[in-house]
Amino acid sequence: NQEIDFDKISYVFELYNDSALTQIYFINESIEESQNTTGLNFTVPEEITLYWRIMATDGQLNSTYTATRTVIFDRTNPTSFDLLSPSNATTTTDNSPSLAWEATNETNLDNYTIEFSTSEAYTTANYTQYSTVSSLSNWTARLEPGTYFWKVIAYDLAGNSNESNQQFTLAISAITQTTTETVTSGAATTSAG
Figure 1 (cartoon, rainbow, N blue to C red):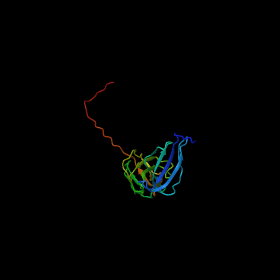
Figure 2: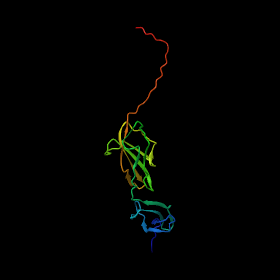
Figure 3: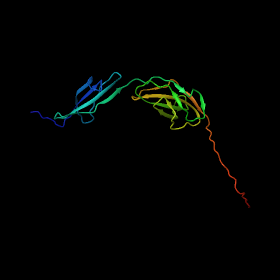
Figure 4: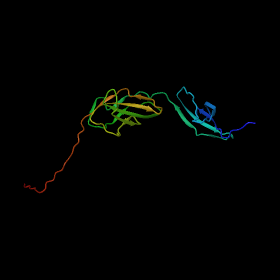
């Protein structure tokens, strides 16, 4: 006499090379539900895009699949790139200048992070801007007068990164502000005292 636990859930983890789910990369058919999070550890040694899903089966053999999901294994940093403009050692009164650099060759680019520091060692970034293209003209904060070292860091979706091949200096000279005041003449005022 065998007792059946109808509340017991088991899982099958399926990993495929193709989105049509016809080329099996890895399958584990013996995952039992646990009290805590049910999980599986395995190693993928190469850079690859894979597609996965899980089938859950209850004690009465009713089954259902999760939606198919994509996972990208990416261990490669974005390619190197150079800063373009403004040229190194530029002095300007424009406290939000247009910046440009070469594009990195990265299929899964997340963003370019542009850092400005008053220290060549970048102990601290005084200003940080972000862009999804290889230029910046839409600043969220303007630079104060001073001399800055700037560089760009390309990040991909897996968190891999690569800094620009160089850092440039950029000097923002005193920003002048012109105020115009209009004075109209009126009747003479006399004061006695």
